[in-house]
Image (cartoon, rainbow, N blue to C red; front, side, top):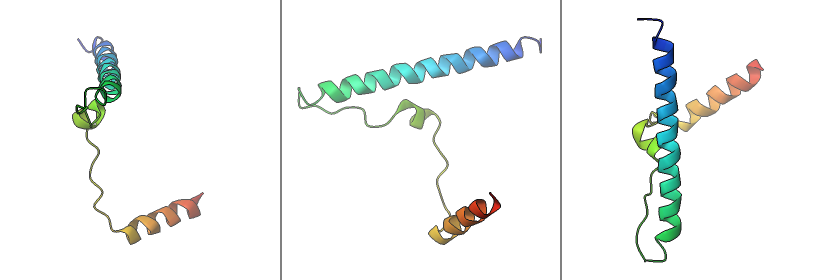
Length: 74
């Protein structure tokens, strides 16, 4: 049973990549065609809707300090 798990995970990743690709293609088509018909187009990417990034809640000073520490460690 566990032998099949990597195959299932890989297949699911391929399906998600394909979904994102098709959604991005449709978004680009709607973006190009919408002005002709004076309509609206899909504003958000499917990848942003299906897997949203966590919201940044640090202060700008904290981000700058973090980046300075990161650069100093290199």
